[in-house]
Length: 314
Image (cartoon, rainbow, N blue to C red; front, side):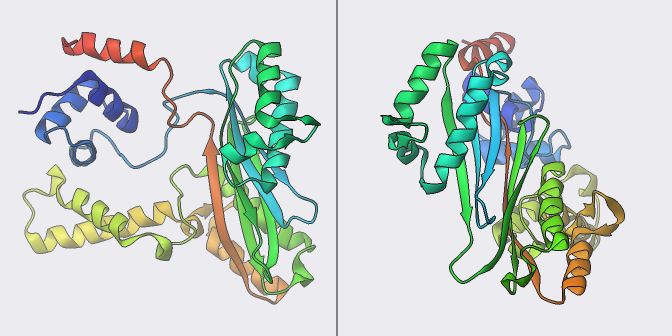
């Protein structure tokens, strides 16, 4: 049996929210393979796996910037150490300026080397260092994404910030012509789409058709191995799994979600309604959703020591 470290248990626990000893057993049963351990926990009904959660927290803000004309937009996450600093006006102003500046950057590294938008004598990195000195906390630009409509394309980029900067969404909605770009119905669709994504943590794709085949294959493998199907004949098991997979994949797709403002219709139905009113084709092209601090390990060494102590290892 493979030797399982506290670090491995910690990582699996953070990914699945399963109990410590369940994580240890899952790793032991799968020779330390993290992905197989996740699937094992899911098959046992101990963890859902593969979904985004809010178990790991970091402070700071998620913010957006939409350029006038709504052709370009940015979603950004900037972290600090405490909620006290995250609420500070100087920190908020910094995040807003960084979102605006990230329009022309293609990576965090390139953003940091640009002249700061409010003081061209300093780079972004140098200005952040000044703010760190003033506020007394470490500040880090963690990530950002910018959307820009492709040349010759019509549509808009919009965004939505939820829960005071802890969840943010950037969305692009395309149209056939520029004639509807300023239309209230069209703009409302973009905003509603962004709000819908913010409210649906499992949604990762616009439609089921976009889900990679390997994702569907993995979900099928997990379902086929579930304990509650072990005694079923193969043909019955396959039918049950097919139904479960169809339902599961729809959970990943934005268009299949019940519309948050009218549960009697889906997001796809909403799009069709707007298309009918405006008389031209409309498509939710893409989106990105940020949750503040997702995936960041806080006080990692202390947590690892806690795991080791409870496991009876060092």
